[in-house]
Length: 94
Image (cartoon, rainbow, N blue to C red; front, side, top):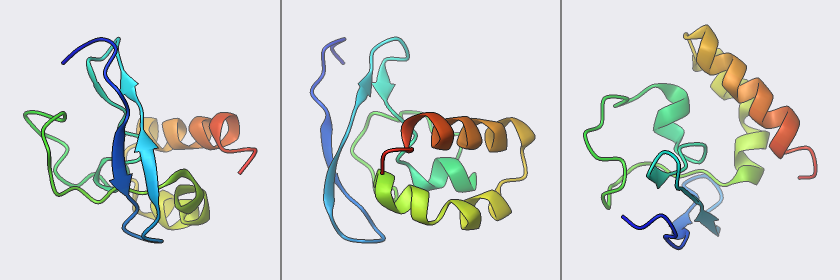
């Protein structure tokens, strides 16, 4: 995967709207912040996070809308802190 990969187009499984998922060059993968399974800790041991998969993608608007539901599911404190930081930093304007 190139360090300058274009964002991938995904469809939110909640609202059915299309949105872009950014590529994270320093991690050499697409961002996991829009991956519902990442937040809900399902299938966290994926071998290849860049492959075309059937993950549930969630847009930023729905991520913000369903954040309380996600917080209740998260059992790992570090992941809960990551969600809190992301919400306060990235999603304020939504």
